[in-house]
Length: 192
Image (tube, rainbow, N blue to C red; front, side, top):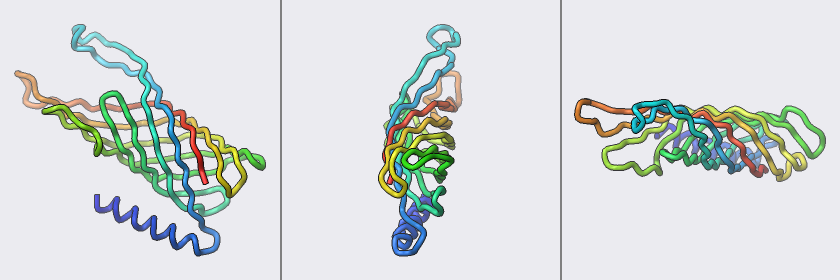
Protein backbone atom coordinates (compact mmCIF):
# COMPACT_ATOMS: atom_id res chain seq x y z
CA UNK A 1 0.00 0.00 0.00
CA UNK A 2 2.87 2.35 0.84
CA UNK A 3 4.38 1.69 -2.59
CA UNK A 4 1.14 2.65 -4.32
CA UNK A 5 0.85 5.89 -2.34
CA UNK A 6 4.52 6.67 -3.03
CA UNK A 7 4.04 5.95 -6.75
CA UNK A 8 0.95 8.20 -6.86
CA UNK A 9 2.77 11.07 -5.10
CA UNK A 10 5.76 10.67 -7.41
CA UNK A 11 3.48 10.79 -10.46
CA UNK A 12 1.70 13.91 -9.14
CA UNK A 13 5.01 15.67 -8.48
CA UNK A 14 6.30 14.70 -11.91
CA UNK A 15 3.08 15.95 -13.54
CA UNK A 16 3.34 19.27 -11.71
CA UNK A 17 6.96 19.62 -12.82
CA UNK A 18 6.06 18.56 -16.37
CA UNK A 19 3.65 21.47 -16.71
CA UNK A 20 6.62 23.81 -16.50
CA UNK A 21 9.10 21.74 -18.50
CA UNK A 22 9.06 21.80 -22.28
CA UNK A 23 7.78 18.70 -24.11
CA UNK A 24 5.97 16.85 -21.32
CA UNK A 25 2.36 17.54 -20.52
CA UNK A 26 -0.32 16.05 -18.26
CA UNK A 27 -2.83 13.65 -19.88
CA UNK A 28 -6.20 12.50 -18.53
CA UNK A 29 -8.45 9.87 -20.09
CA UNK A 30 -11.68 9.15 -18.17
CA UNK A 31 -14.10 6.45 -19.37
CA UNK A 32 -17.25 4.62 -18.35
CA UNK A 33 -19.02 1.67 -19.92
CA UNK A 34 -19.97 -1.97 -19.68
CA UNK A 35 -18.19 -5.28 -19.17
CA UNK A 36 -19.79 -8.10 -21.19
CA UNK A 37 -19.12 -11.83 -20.95
CA UNK A 38 -20.35 -15.42 -20.65
CA UNK A 39 -19.78 -17.32 -17.41
CA UNK A 40 -19.57 -21.10 -17.01
CA UNK A 41 -20.04 -22.53 -13.52
CA UNK A 42 -21.28 -25.59 -11.62
CA UNK A 43 -24.68 -24.99 -10.04
CA UNK A 44 -24.86 -26.77 -6.64
CA UNK A 45 -28.67 -26.53 -6.66
CA UNK A 46 -28.92 -28.75 -9.76
CA UNK A 47 -26.48 -31.46 -8.65
CA UNK A 48 -23.38 -29.51 -9.80
CA UNK A 49 -24.67 -29.48 -13.35
CA UNK A 50 -22.68 -27.07 -15.52
CA UNK A 51 -24.50 -23.87 -16.43
CA UNK A 52 -23.63 -20.93 -18.73
CA UNK A 53 -25.02 -17.39 -18.29
CA UNK A 54 -24.45 -13.98 -19.90
CA UNK A 55 -23.22 -11.29 -17.53
CA UNK A 56 -23.10 -7.51 -17.84
CA UNK A 57 -21.31 -5.25 -15.38
CA UNK A 58 -20.59 -1.52 -15.03
CA UNK A 59 -17.05 -0.12 -15.21
CA UNK A 60 -15.46 3.31 -14.79
CA UNK A 61 -11.80 4.28 -14.93
CA UNK A 62 -9.48 7.26 -15.18
CA UNK A 63 -5.97 7.30 -16.66
CA UNK A 64 -3.64 10.08 -15.48
CA UNK A 65 -0.16 10.38 -16.88
CA UNK A 66 2.40 12.21 -18.94
CA UNK A 67 2.67 12.52 -22.69
CA UNK A 68 6.24 11.62 -23.65
CA UNK A 69 5.89 12.08 -27.40
CA UNK A 70 3.19 13.09 -29.84
CA UNK A 71 1.91 9.50 -29.81
CA UNK A 72 2.93 7.96 -26.46
CA UNK A 73 1.63 8.63 -22.96
CA UNK A 74 2.15 6.58 -19.78
CA UNK A 75 0.73 6.84 -16.28
CA UNK A 76 -1.55 5.31 -13.66
CA UNK A 77 -5.08 3.98 -14.18
CA UNK A 78 -7.59 3.94 -11.31
CA UNK A 79 -10.97 2.27 -11.68
CA UNK A 80 -14.04 0.62 -10.26
CA UNK A 81 -15.70 -2.53 -11.65
CA UNK A 82 -19.15 -3.64 -10.40
CA UNK A 83 -19.37 -7.41 -10.96
CA UNK A 84 -22.45 -9.24 -9.70
CA UNK A 85 -20.65 -10.72 -6.68
CA UNK A 86 -17.73 -8.30 -6.25
CA UNK A 87 -16.92 -4.59 -6.36
CA UNK A 88 -13.26 -4.31 -7.35
CA UNK A 89 -10.95 -1.28 -7.59
CA UNK A 90 -8.07 -1.84 -10.04
CA UNK A 91 -4.91 0.25 -9.84
CA UNK A 92 -2.64 -0.22 -12.83
CA UNK A 93 0.23 1.14 -14.83
CA UNK A 94 -1.08 2.24 -18.19
CA UNK A 95 0.11 3.16 -21.67
CA UNK A 96 -1.79 4.94 -24.46
CA UNK A 97 -0.32 5.00 -27.98
CA UNK A 98 -1.76 6.69 -31.09
CA UNK A 99 -1.44 4.13 -33.88
CA UNK A 100 -2.78 5.97 -36.94
CA UNK A 101 -5.23 8.60 -37.99
CA UNK A 102 -6.02 11.80 -39.80
CA UNK A 103 -6.45 15.27 -38.39
CA UNK A 104 -9.33 14.90 -35.93
CA UNK A 105 -9.70 11.08 -35.78
CA UNK A 106 -7.05 8.82 -34.25
CA UNK A 107 -6.87 5.03 -33.72
CA UNK A 108 -5.14 4.36 -30.41
CA UNK A 109 -3.92 1.33 -28.50
CA UNK A 110 -4.25 0.96 -24.76
CA UNK A 111 -2.69 -1.37 -22.20
CA UNK A 112 -3.26 -1.41 -18.44
CA UNK A 113 -1.76 -3.98 -16.07
CA UNK A 114 -1.98 -4.01 -12.29
CA UNK A 115 -3.84 -5.27 -9.24
CA UNK A 116 -7.41 -4.83 -8.04
CA UNK A 117 -8.45 -4.33 -4.44
CA UNK A 118 -11.83 -4.88 -2.79
CA UNK A 119 -11.79 -1.66 -0.73
CA UNK A 120 -15.45 -0.75 -1.26
CA UNK A 121 -16.84 -4.30 -1.42
CA UNK A 122 -19.06 -5.31 1.50
CA UNK A 123 -18.98 -9.05 2.27
CA UNK A 124 -21.62 -11.14 3.99
CA UNK A 125 -20.68 -12.51 7.41
CA UNK A 126 -18.01 -15.21 7.13
CA UNK A 127 -17.00 -14.27 3.57
CA UNK A 128 -13.82 -12.40 2.56
CA UNK A 129 -13.33 -11.10 -0.99
CA UNK A 130 -9.85 -10.17 -2.19
CA UNK A 131 -8.89 -8.75 -5.56
CA UNK A 132 -6.13 -9.98 -7.82
CA UNK A 133 -4.10 -9.35 -10.94
CA UNK A 134 -5.66 -7.45 -13.83
CA UNK A 135 -4.70 -6.90 -17.47
CA UNK A 136 -6.67 -4.77 -19.95
CA UNK A 137 -5.39 -4.40 -23.57
CA UNK A 138 -7.46 -2.86 -26.35
CA UNK A 139 -8.07 -0.46 -29.21
CA UNK A 140 -10.04 2.74 -29.45
CA UNK A 141 -10.96 5.73 -31.56
CA UNK A 142 -10.32 9.30 -30.44
CA UNK A 143 -12.29 12.12 -32.09
CA UNK A 144 -10.96 15.64 -31.51
CA UNK A 145 -8.08 17.95 -32.33
CA UNK A 146 -4.54 16.92 -31.39
CA UNK A 147 -3.62 18.43 -28.01
CA UNK A 148 -7.23 19.37 -27.16
CA UNK A 149 -10.14 17.58 -25.52
CA UNK A 150 -11.43 14.57 -27.45
CA UNK A 151 -14.22 11.99 -27.20
CA UNK A 152 -13.18 8.35 -27.15
CA UNK A 153 -14.73 4.95 -27.82
CA UNK A 154 -12.65 1.96 -26.71
CA UNK A 155 -13.08 -1.79 -27.10
CA UNK A 156 -10.84 -3.80 -24.76
CA UNK A 157 -10.41 -7.25 -23.24
CA UNK A 158 -10.35 -7.26 -19.43
CA UNK A 159 -9.04 -10.17 -17.37
CA UNK A 160 -9.53 -9.73 -13.62
CA UNK A 161 -8.73 -12.24 -10.86
CA UNK A 162 -10.39 -12.42 -7.43
CA UNK A 163 -10.46 -14.83 -4.49
CA UNK A 164 -13.38 -15.35 -2.12
CA UNK A 165 -12.92 -17.18 1.19
CA UNK A 166 -16.22 -18.70 2.32
CA UNK A 167 -17.62 -20.20 5.51
CA UNK A 168 -16.60 -23.90 5.61
CA UNK A 169 -19.37 -26.46 5.40
CA UNK A 170 -19.74 -29.21 8.01
CA UNK A 171 -17.16 -31.55 6.38
CA UNK A 172 -14.61 -28.93 5.28
CA UNK A 173 -11.65 -27.24 6.95
CA UNK A 174 -11.58 -24.40 4.45
CA UNK A 175 -13.64 -23.25 1.49
CA UNK A 176 -12.71 -20.71 -1.16
CA UNK A 177 -13.42 -19.77 -4.73
CA UNK A 178 -10.87 -18.47 -7.23
CA UNK A 179 -12.62 -16.30 -9.81
CA UNK A 180 -11.35 -15.10 -13.17
CA UNK A 181 -13.50 -12.46 -14.84
CA UNK A 182 -12.89 -12.48 -18.61
CA UNK A 183 -14.85 -9.62 -20.12
CA UNK A 184 -15.16 -7.57 -23.28
CA UNK A 185 -15.26 -3.90 -22.24
CA UNK A 186 -16.94 -1.19 -24.28
CA UNK A 187 -16.25 2.30 -22.89
CA UNK A 188 -17.09 5.89 -23.83
CA UNK A 189 -14.88 8.64 -22.53
CA UNK A 190 -13.17 11.96 -22.82
CA UNK A 191 -9.46 12.70 -22.93
CA UNK A 192 -7.46 15.88 -22.70
